[in-house]
Length: 303
Image 1 (cartoon, one colour):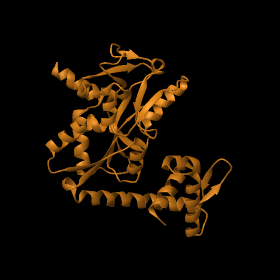
Image 2: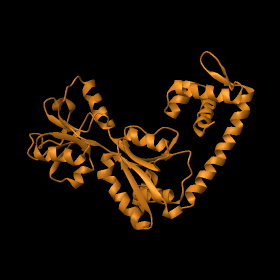
Image 3: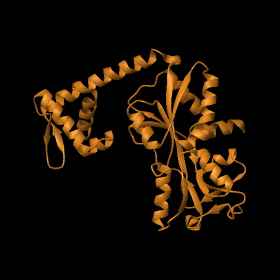
Image 4: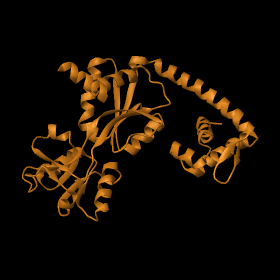
C-alpha cells in the first residue's frame, strides 16, 4: 500500500465516482480503477460496490476511509514539522511562467530577499501545465501564472492583478499609429509566438480558429528575448503581457479587442500547511499586491 493509493482511495470515497476522482487527481480513470482493485486485493475484501453510474463504499470501505483520513492528518502534520525544521533557512521552490518571469516576479524576488535576506529561492520557468504537475508532486511550493480562469478548488491562490495580453509592434510598423486592433486585422501580419505547447499560444490559436483566420506564423520560440528581438526588428508582431510596455518603451502595445483581461495568480497546494519561508513569501506578495478591499482601504488612507 502506497501513499498515492491512499490519496486515490480517499478521493474516490469523496466523489463516489471513478471518473470524477480521476479528474480531480489529474490521472486517468483506468489508472485509478486499477489502483483501487490492487488495494482491494491487498486488503482481501471489496471496498466499493459498483453500480451503473456510480459506486458506494462497503462497510469495510467506510472503516478504511476513516482510518485513511486519520493517517493523512498525521502525515500532513509530520510533513509540516519536517518543513519547519529548516524554517528560515529552507529554500523556496517557485515555478514561474515566462510572462511573469520577465515582469512581475523580479520585483517580488527583490522585495522578498530585502525583507528576508537569509532566505533563498530556486526558480523553475516553464509552461503552466508543467508547473501545475510539479506543484501536484510537491516539487514546487508556489507557482506564478497568468490565466483566464481561477485555479481549481483544491488549490489556494492569491490574485495579484489583472493583466491584458497585448500585441506589440515596432515603432516602424504600419500598425504603430493605432491604439487597438481586432484579430481580423492580423490576417496578413507576420507573428512571432511561443511554441504550441504554451497555454498562451493555444489560447491565441483558438481565438483565430473561432474566426476562421489562418495567421502567418513567422517564428516560434520559448525565449521572451527572441520574441522581443523579432518585434524590435520589425520582422513580426508578438503577443506579450501589458507589463512589457513599462520595460520596452520603444515598442508599441496595441489592445486586441478580442482578448479579455486575464489574472496573474500565485498558487499553492491546499493540502499542505505553509512553513515559515512560504508564509513570509506570501506576506511579501500580499503587501505588494493586496486584495481589492485592502487595496481600496490603503488608497482611502492615502487620500
